[in-house]
Length: 472
Image (tube, rainbow, N blue to C red; front, side, top):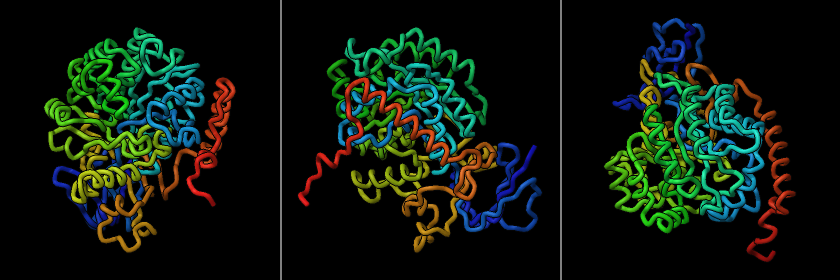
């Protein structure tokens, strides 16, 4: 077994039960686990490799609880910069219909790279798209190639526009195929053991894109295999209105009626939760993946994080799909989660360290994992490090842990996943970010060109040229 010693750590924040913090600390990693933590630089344990982390803040890796990896192909499209969720989706569905398996792989690699560079060690892909030659296995392969800890949430569309759903008919799947493929993925890839790098979750996309029968059958399948369950619920005012008009009840009431509540369930967004919804969420211990940047971008609203925590629900943080966020930066997401809660709930509603707890401990609890999210012996060696001698910390070095959020640091200098160094000196160790960027840009231009030609659209006309508000 290989060993790695991290020594002279300026500040080590464990996020364990006692919230222990150490100065001039060391961490010994053996294979993929933390073996020991200590203080001082005398009598250090022997190791095959040592890293001197003088002046570093070190903490657990962050956990991204909701994403759509293919969407890095579809970022910053001018015609979609100023529209609400449902209008955004109508055009987005046309773009989705042209995605290929190669597109998906490169998009996933780009997102994984961004996540690693911004302090994420575990991520969820809510992968609901299967068109052309796309394979859900490809998301797993990309995660393995990048070396990030990964949950594939096998999503789906099953009702198209002809049946009252939002997606066009040509991108939906048959429900028997969805269930069969979900079971295949579980049997092929799901690892229930502690320290697992790959797990599978069940994730029909949303109440406006699948039938309630599929929701019921899929969660019954998932509970036979004891995997997690994920979907979009209470995503926006439009989404909430659709559910009430179609089913005659609120989203959370519908979820309760069909069995989609419990500790093995988490919703994406949760921005339209009422007091009665909060009661259901707390009583059933249902979780929410809060996506602050995406919610602001689509003007969907703000998840009531503090209210959810008060009633006993679990909250994690997420970047959401790159087309609804235009980024995959976990530090930025945590910062904006804190700021957005303060806008709605006051300056003392969420502290920087509480926000970081949601991104670590909260994410681990949401995914029902007790092997990640904290630094202590016996846990997996998923940790990140930030040099505090950088411009973002200048004048703000008095509390480096809070400064990671308050000072807009943006990226990490070190990222270790499962004992393997993935980012060192703020650079990817196993991927060429420039080559990935160029390859994705080529694929993105080609995809958008195909859609523009097929549907007679002009998606890339800059909006400001048509709508700039001032006369110059």
